[in-house]
Amino acid sequence: MKTAALQKTTVQKTTDELAHEIKTATDIEDYLVRNKEHLFSDGNLSRHLNMLLKQKHLSRADVVRGSLLDRAYVYQIFSGEKSPSRDKLIALAFGLKLSDEETQKMLKLSCSRELYAREERDALILFALQHGMTIMSANDLLFKHNFPVLGCPKE
Image (cartoon, rainbow, N blue to C red; front, side, top):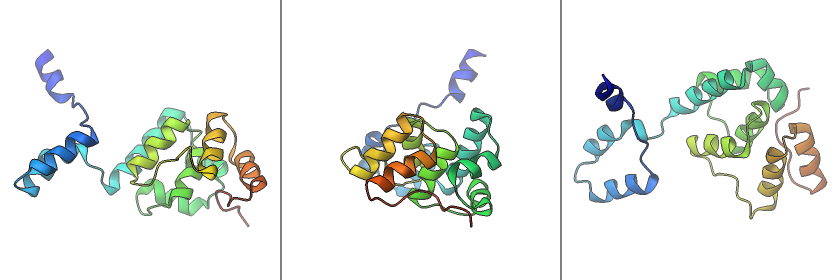
């Protein structure tokens, strides 16, 4: 019984391990089949976001309010119909009340560039996430430093 449970547990391969397997692969189809669970796909972001909703005990309406994004657009992101831009994902992170680490994971999962502390705008966003700021407070900080704000305020 323990053996069956161990077989179901999958250790996530690192990017370096996957890159090495690609380099040594003789058949890309075989590589894709063997590593299906380790590769990102369009449905993974939607599943991940819905999992975060449950973990955080939030509703989609909470995320809409906390992200300043259009309600229909947020629902389309959660259903997998829309692929959001990096800034929209960051706005969602505020709506989901994610930590900086959780935000980085979400950005990586969506194949978006992670927040980079050497870039001033990204540093301001990281600061806001690390200090549990709302999107409005983060936007005040961004605006004060002459950077584009996040979300799209409702009209």
